Image (cartoon, rainbow over all chains, first blue to last red; front, side, top):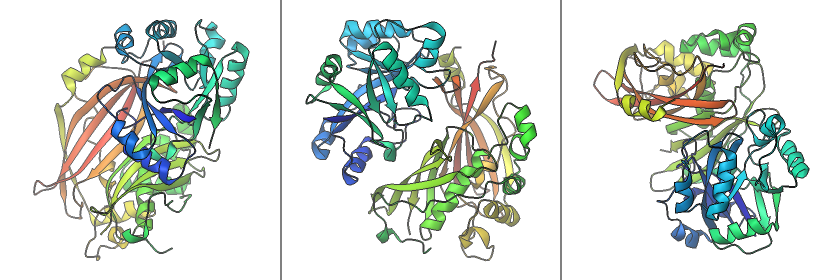
Length: 208
Length: 136
Length: 145
């Protein structure tokens, strides 16, 4: 099963895509993904319900978040009420160690994203300050990466034994599906996704 | 190239890719026309003094260039809205590629929605955005 | 940086008005400079001669930010513009631009921590018709220590 794990809709400040248009695009272009995760910036979109859209499009639509830490941005999968109370999703200076720890405690998974971004990504911070315990997965393929950034992410993942996932980081409709993650397991909901990420049976895909 | 009518477009259609002129003379022409005569746009050396790698194309110029491309694609269209996010500067005298693609078609309103991107030689997105275009 | 406080105090506050005349020559020179080929934007004799849709984004109000707006940093850049066209801008229009702060938020990105300030200009003509809305997203970054 192939899921694009990192995407933004109009709910994110710099997102310009409506979710129904993502679905329409995926189906019209016959992209090889079975669904996607909406990882809105600095929030968890409690309000939106995409079940009807899932039924209509035949795609799995899950919700996560992208938060901002002292080691760069982090994707959160399995966001629940406990995690939302554990720290302020809107803050731009969260401690990665705390985000990882609280995610683990609350049954979620924290995945540093676009870690290869110069100066601001996880890789740059690791170079300066060393690794953070508890990180086990990073985004090794990001659809918005520039030259060398995914390569750096892969190198650091290899160095520390991290598994890699892929996500498009789409902010506009036509950018969805640029990168994704293939799972061996069938995923029907967020719990399945968290379980699959924990199990480790997945690989990052570069689709662009 | 003939401009398209609403009946001729569909979701997924790509606009012709264009490499507009963003040379220094053209950028200076634009800045004069727009009253945007700032050194970071019209002088490579002065731009470097301001911490930039070179003079950069004004954001409003790249946006207007995208609108012109839309007008060259759709017959007598009206751009109802255009929204561009500047991810990285476009250097003056470079050769960025301007792209557009139809991401939604609304037959009742005769509206096409477009994704717009400007990429550099390495294919990296410098500007991304959307437009809502109404056909007559 | 108490962005929430800045947002609460400043968003929605109109802080400037400015007037701009729209001339045939300005429309034609702008259109030529951006490679317009549609005669609507190039030929003053065209029955539907008008300014291209992003023409109003060239106008800058007298103030970029309200007086007494908190100093956030000396570094910054233009993060993008959104133009909504409510009606055609034509030669002879006398546009009045009303400026307000539409939003303030903070985030981090490739260049580090940023505060986004959205400066909105609503352009009406001499008949009071709203023709264009331009949202200018400007970024201010804390001064480097």
